[in-house]
Image 1 (cartoon, rainbow, N blue to C red):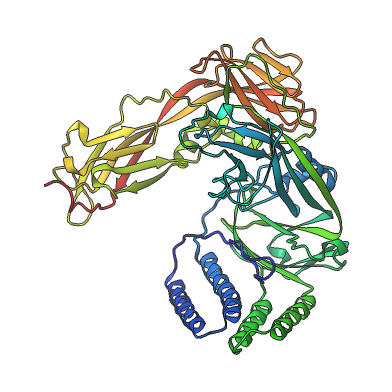
Image 2 (tube, rainbow, N blue to C red; image 1 turned 45 degrees about the horizontal axis):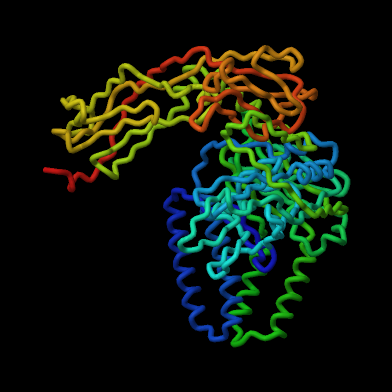
Length: 609
């Protein structure tokens, strides 16, 4: 949840949080709902449409800001780890080197669609960023057209048109989660069926990209003892105003003026991260980026707007001038950042845009086809002129040595009783690298479960005798499903042992020049013989001469036929592997997880009598 005013410039990016509230929070929520209702009522009294829209925009923003603050304050503090968002920058000598890698590592994949009249295009970026996180530096990517195999050039349009009779290029239906994905849509002609392979295929995608690299980045490590202190490096100063259990208030100033070419660019130069006592990075819950003075200013502007009868050009200029004057006086930037977990150390980083390098490039990217499975006998090249590292790999690979007690402690139990004929107890644990190597042959010979009634004090009473079909244990899905239609009495407790699975994994490190038979390095690709190294038992990670893990671009299984079996697999990397780490599952153990669950009460009024 990131909230920033004014809406007239940067807008609000809000990820809604579902959380419980304390009694005081509930009172504030009621007050907020009343305030919202009063505001909506006041809007109805405004006759001038321009004035009404302006009041609705600013007033709605202030209410949204208040609602966001309430949700962030009331969200329970539960530890959730994230990644170091600056790790990617640490691999490159300058910010500009990171920009060059971002642009030169971009390519486009042809994706199969379920329809003969659609072809999906997926731009693949060298760096992964989870929504709402994005590339570190201000950037813009604009698609312009696609060139087809028949030489036709189809211009990009922002949305698919039902009335356009021709071939179209527009954002795909997945653009909420993958905003740069595109779809080529072919016209449907009644009575004429055309297979997708016979349609003109996309050959290249045209567009343009712009990225702004800052002069440099300044970082400050802060703890509780730094509260109230100002730390300065060159032209950047950071003050830690407050540090509480799960949030921090920070103020920073850049004494150097903003680069002239960025005067009209919306920038957010502050990056705040936190670690807990384990040293792991905490995920962010959200932030509020307005001071009390800024909120008061916009509230004052709102009152002024509400006192008007009509909207005029003179009044609009007055508001703009007031806002410009006020913002010029705000030489300090403020942020209140919330994290999912208790904060031990803050890492506050500021991008210095007092000087900047703006990189603009026209793109003409070939559309490449790399299906997950192919019957091709030859290996298609996919070598990109960049090196990209996988900063998640070291943490992910710790799962190879997962222990029995560690696995048990990570289990969480939830229930679903919406359907009394298929009520569920669910056993879940965070997915780890160990889970990747479990395979599919997960069988548990004996998973005893006993259901009990409860006595008058709510404690466990007598066991219930049940037919075998009354419940089902599914180790692969991690569920116990039970049908209350088949229970002679209402169950209150379930007691038993649920099977969990754990792989024994052997790790080996091999020099790329001394690979065993069945493994071969071809350029930036690792070729794996499927018979010698079956995929269900083996995983491979590559490092280059720096000792860092290379990021895998993609992998392709080359199969004997469309139905299989696999002959060999090809793993493509962003860089030249000089060392391989192999991980082999050598054994599979069943871990019995003992449990006693107080069952949630289901609505049994609809059950068969």
